[in-house]
Length: 107
Image (cartoon, rainbow, N blue to C red; front, side, top):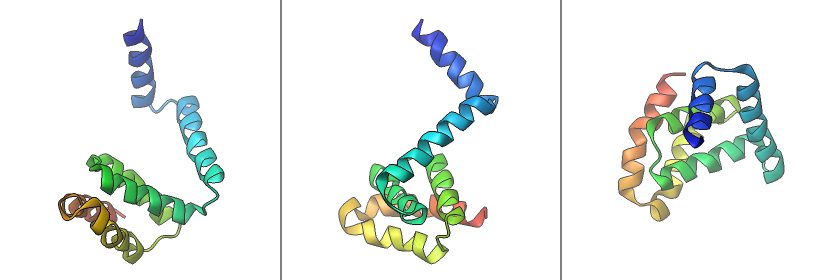
């Protein structure tokens, strides 16, 4: 049963189902509103958390895109990497740097 639900969700997501995408984006917007942060700061904080977690490349591409759309500059985005180095550690930041650079280059 659980696999059927997962399969349906993944299929709808892969098909870019408008209702599902709208629901997922709505949660993103709700999270921004509930945080009390402006969208730019919110996206930079989330980018910092992705670096700390060692997130996959797709996560960086998505979050950098959101940051740029929210008005963040490339300097501010790279500044996030500098800011989290003492807490996340140099290996995490070095691993994230090419992913962030690729996401910036894609814009």
